Length: 142
Ligand SMILES: [Zn+2]
Ligand SMILES: [Zn+2]
Image 1 (cartoon, rainbow, N blue to C red):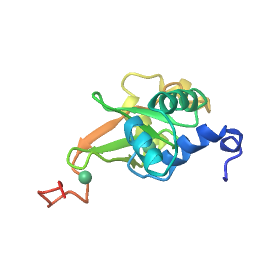
Image 2 (image 1 turned 30 degrees about the vertical axis):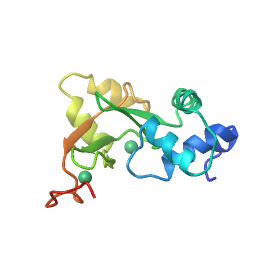
Image 3 (image 1 turned 60 degrees about the vertical axis):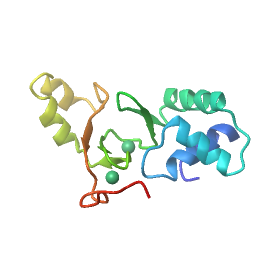
């Protein structure tokens, strides 16, 4: 465990956090539950939800709202996400401060933001499309 804050997690929180962190595709609560059950852990869906809520409140995990689904991201820095409509994976999109600045400059006071170190907003950008792996493939059922 390289992060000290993650080191203070309870064993159940750690289980849930590790399940998210190990995957690049940003799993849903249901997927996290399946991963843990398959791994031999006796953990209820309610417990998974409770731990997720706690991890989000502590800022260790971020929610990614896909409209009809919620996924979980272990990333610390603000970034956008790419959601593949075929395989349903969610991956990180490199999002620098300048890129975000560019996007919000029409509705946000740039000067105020530039002076401070703090983010005056949270970033929830989800780009829908077809990922590199799925481009050119038709059948993803196998
Ligand atoms: Zn992410
Ligand atoms: Zn895909």
